[in-house]
Image (cartoon, rainbow over all chains, first blue to last red):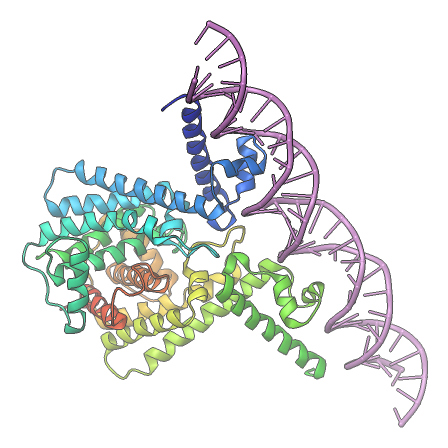
Length: 223
Length: 223
DNA sequence: TGTACATCAGTGAACGCGCGTTCACTGATGTAC
DNA sequence: TGTACATCAGTGAACGCGCGTTCACTGATGTAC
């Protein structure tokens, strides 16, 4: 069942994933190359196809792995904080940022511009892709209690539906809050990761992030 | 001085830019190809090099053109609104969003993940790249008056320096506000453009955007 | 107005490169009796 | 424990593709006298 052959297979599967990640970091997802991975693996290019169906399938594996890794990092950051829900929300945001700075190209793969010619298959990608926002949603619900804002009528149905999709009974206002924070978070982290404002804009980027985060949180929890 | 030859040259220069844009839309910046443009131009590939120094230089031209086009669109949106500074700020944000939705791949070129192997030359790119945020900064200063928030000590110097770079005498708090709104704007628009939340999350995406925008603006102008 | 020369736009062939994927194959590792 | 057979990992050659860029060239358009 777990003979030496199966074991070796697992190891090489893992190596391919690691080399894929390294490739992302060096050349970006668009230039991810099966042949290059084969080279670094010391194999002939066709041999990689024993482990991977196609380049696209490899990309999907990398996407799923990145989502999972990210969600785990955020989860750990939340669990490591013993404060109230707002404090843990802030911890989640900082954890998200930290992971993104440590894994810039994987972040870009998940939240950056789409890879030309590649479409992630929703059935493998959707669930891992929503794990982080689900964490935020839970914390926001806990932090805000019943004091969620009223929402424009045009959005009510949509927001209720989204609440249902996440399985919680959440008020539309809470969902709006969560989406707002989520949007801000991706934007802020994305800009920092891709050097949007120039690399040396702030001497203490973490402090700048925290200042903005604090202000965003005032939108989400009752003052 | 402007003989038929020079005229034709201008026309072809323009065509190359247009075809480049079309390419961006079809295959993304990473796959932008001089040869493909030559084909569509009905020329042999080497002929394009009479008009363009290299693929990278063409990319730079496209970046500059996109920045300029975007800034013009935002400018127009602001000028078309006769309301107060807050109303014009909202108009600017909506104008920004509109342009991005109309030019998704150009938006990705400017604010998405970097194109592998390409680095925009700052001396051609910096100035056009800051035009939009300069517009926002002006409106925010006008809207907020002197009522800007206090900022964490760690950020004071940086924010003052940024204010200087934009030539206005702005309080650090105002600059913090502007950067916050800017970050949010790119994040929100970027997610909508790349379909970050799934394409059919909101039946009325503009209303969702506006709801979030309204809340962001409360952070920027005194209530 | 006409001619001689310089500039310029576009051609076609070639360079060297890397890519994804298929296919028939060999030799080693595992499994069933 | 030993043998016969099936599975599997990796090879090497090949397919057809597209790319950026250089170079010597031809023929047309412009310019100076």
